[in-house]
Length: 293
Image: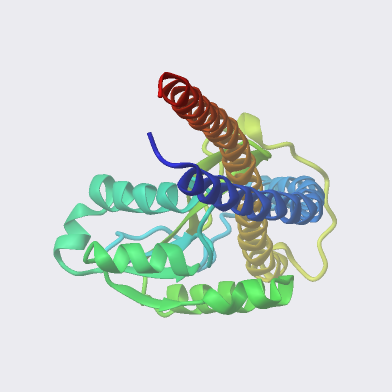
């Protein structure tokens, strides 16, 4: 059995750890509130915007095609991995890396063999692990989280759009954690470019729009804006998921620390009781020895 001093040191150490994890949990909970509000606000907007674009494209008597909706063979692929700059958030980052590797393995294995799969990382954690696994991370935008805003997200999305237009990439896929609630995040791999239109016509509701100047011009202006908004939505989902995952992880760590402290205090009390009993026995034995003499 460990001596009393060692047990006491361990108890104090675990208590310090519990203070840290508890503080991190509260910080993440505060950040999650704002992130959750941002996600709740943008989701209906993106959904309605997507429906309007689909309606515009499919309600026209003429076939509308733009560079951003035209499909071509995906000879060159870009995968955008959204993770975090910090750890201590459970499987949040690991799930992004796992999904990225799964997408490459199952959908773009031929391109990967031809060294035609590029990765852009937004978050240091995914970038670090993917590089360790031998993947080519072309660039990163890890500083996005220092000034997360729509304008910053739009600048990044614009670079993807420009690369797609000049055919540097034929397909752009974003891997991210979709926010469901504080304890649930679902990792997704969604195609950003080219913009996919619904196959099922029942998903489209036709309206009698009045176009000025004409539908083709409007679509060419609206689609890039919609893509930027969609990408921003994915980033907001990822940010909210990170705070939710970290809050949940730190909550579990705090509970585990509390349980460990209880076990150590029980061990400490047993050891202390044993030490007291031993001292009493020594005193009684000494007294008996004195009587006998």
